[in-house]
Length: 162
Image (cartoon, rainbow, N blue to C red; front, side):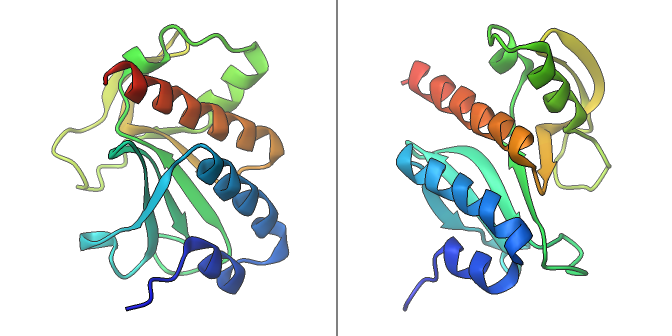
């Protein structure tokens, strides 16, 4: 059976305003040896992908929305990350602010057994953070640089635990 690649869905469902950034990010992930796996289970009927490196989750991408009300945007979540991932990462204050604006606070969605927790993210403590830590919806060029940095942090974490 032919498995459609994520780029096919992006070109089919997203308008030009959203395509550019997501396609740039997909290219970036592929150049960094990330693998794309179409999600199953709860996410099976949605345009949702697990992004992996060395068989470990790096991030998650959704084309459209969780509620199916609109297909013309995209979302990226970080992996189920803990505070220790961000402890020794050096960022300028502007980039930290972008990350902090995109923290995924727990919405009690029932997707995990753990409700939001306290996390220290780039030196600042936040309460009730979702286990995925970050959620970027239609990231602009600056936010996309943070998303790339987020995947670099996770890749470094994976490599350090081999």
